[in-house]
Length: 406
Image 1 (cartoon, rainbow, N blue to C red):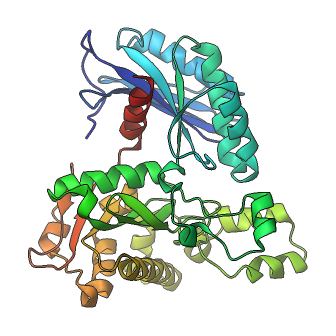
Image 2: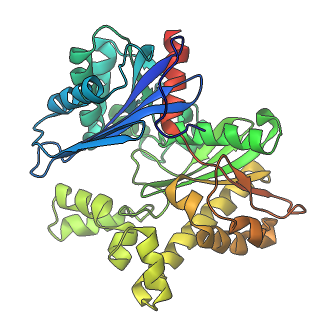
C-alpha cells in the first residue's frame, strides 16, 4: 500500500497527480506509481463559499491557508503554488500524467485520455450525476489550462461495472423510455471494488480468476459488489449512487412510491433530492452520520441510534445473503473503506447474522487493531474466508493513468 508523504524522489521515478474534484472541494495526491509512495497530498475545501481552507503536506511539513477560493480554477492555482513553494517539484518527480476521478462514465469500461470529445461527454452525463460530473469537468478544464503539457486521464467510478450482465443492469421499465433517458444500473465505487477484490485475492494467495467474492465498500457512501472470477456480476448502486445500502446521509433502497407520495404532498424535485441524498441514511435515522458517534450513542442507550445501526446491518446482511446465492456460494467476503476497515464491531455484527451460511469470524483477529495491508479475520476452518483490505483509489487511478499513457 502507499506510504505517507515521504522522502525526496529518485530521478527515474514516475509520478501521477491524482485529482478528485467535488462540488465544493478539490482533493489531491501525488503518487509514485513504482514505489507506491505518496509524495504529497492536500485539499482545498469550501470552494466558492466563505471560510475556504487549503492544506498541503509534503514530507513532514504541512502548510495551511484560509484565503477565499472562488472557483476550481483558483483551487488548482493554489495547488500548483503549493507544489512550487513547498515541494516536491512536479517535474523532478517524473510527472507523467494527471489522473482525474470521474464518478459517472456512462458506458465507458476503461480510462480515457481526456480530449474535448471525452470532456463534453463527461459534461453531458451531468444529468445522471449533477454534482459529481459537473465538478469533475470543471476540475479537468482548470487542470488542463494550468498543465497542458502532460496528458490528462479520466478514470471512471462506473467503469468496473460497465460489463454487468444484462439481467443485473436492466431496470424493468418501458424499454423505449429507458433507452431514451439512459436509465440502467451503472454501479459506482468501481475503482475501489476492482482494486480491493484483486488485493484480496493476493492476500489469500488464490487466483483472482477462480474466486467468488462479495466486497463491501463501507464509508459515508456505501456499496456492495458480487465479483465472480474478476468479473462483477452485480452491485448495489444503480443509476446513481443513491440505490442500495444504507449510507451516511443517503437512504439506499426504498419504494419509488415514497418519491411519488412526497411529490403529491407538494415537495419539489430539489427538496426530495436533498432529502434522499443529504438528510437520510444514518443521519436521518439518528441525527449523526459519523459511525464513531453513532456507536457512542448506541452504547449510551440511544434508541434512535440503535435502530439506525440495526437497519444498517439488516441491509448489509440482506445484500451479502443475496449475492451469496447469486454467486452460487462465496469464497471471500471483504470489508473495505473507512467504516469497513476500522469498525470491528460492525464486522462482528454482520458475520454473526451470516454464520449459518458459513461466515465464521475469528474474534481475536477481528479486534487485533489497525489493519495495514490486509488481514484475514475469519477462523481457519470457516467455509467462507472473511478479510479486511484497505482500499487505495488514488494508487489505482495513478496506475491506470500510467498504463494508458505508457
